[in-house]
Amino acid sequence: MTATVLRRAAELLLVLLGLSVLVFLLTSLAPGDPAEEILRRGGIQPTARSVAALRAELGLDQPLFTQYLRWLLALLRGDFGHSYTDRSPVAAEILSRVPATLRLAGAAAAVAVVLAVLASVRAAFRPGALDSRAIALVTVAIAGVPPYIVGILLISVVAVGLRALPTGGADGPGAVVLPALTLGLAGAATLLRLLRADLARALRLPFVRLAAAKGLRPRRAIMVHALRVAAPNAITAASTVLAELLAGAVVVETLFSWPGVGQLAVSAIRQRDLPVVQAYVLVTAVTTVLVLALVELCLAAADPRVRRR
Image (tube, rainbow, N blue to C red; front, side):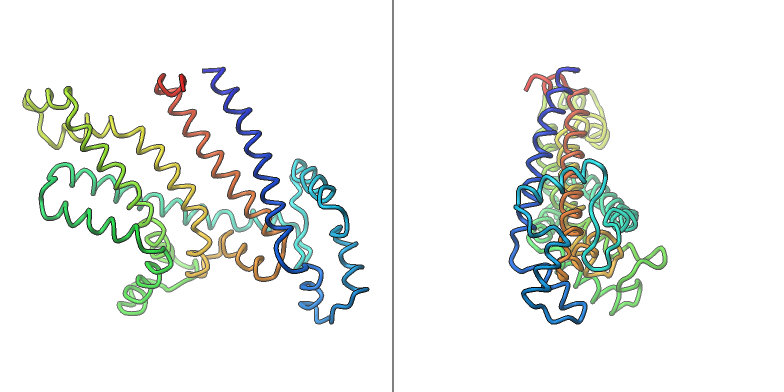
């Protein structure tokens, strides 16, 4: 197990280094000049001299490799730089928005897991029933619809039509319901497709059939035996879904005016605020990699077959 942890840690460091290079290049080589954008937002008509002076002040006139090294060394010290918009520390802005994003992602993950487990168990218990077929149809439909369409439909029906929940913001306990449903339904569709297939395979295993032949009730055979066999793949899929929820929160937070990191990133993209964009992309990518690595280590600790891969 120690060798597995060390090998995964070395691979993780290489992945994080590669991510830092990609994030810096993709944001730095994007079209447009941040210096010109900053001057225009300040009400100043950009000239060649003013743009050159501001680029020198921001360090944008240096070679790209030098900019990357300076940025990477600052990251290692925990310094994400300062926003081009208001010169505030980027790390403080990100941290102030993280609790709202985690609250939304946690609620969406709970929606996805609960719906996926309940629907997959129901479909496995009555595979040929009308409601099981309806579950499969709805799953395919939700998986093929972008989250922002689902969000618009929920706003139109629940918030505007029924006036049951607020259309946006984060005030009140009910404000998280619609954005969590919008994110969670897409995650539930992904988990349900995998969990339903794994449960169907698990129910055909000899020891599950033997338990049923000995008189174990079908529901108990599914919950105790089949679901345990399907759990490892479901856990792996759940980690991927959680990472997708964190990434997909950008659209949902913007749609519902949710004050999270995603809404901050969209605003920074519009304003060409590169330090904020770089910090958001890097934090999201690192969180995704760390979640997947942690799940893999947990599976390796529980299943020796994973350690031998």
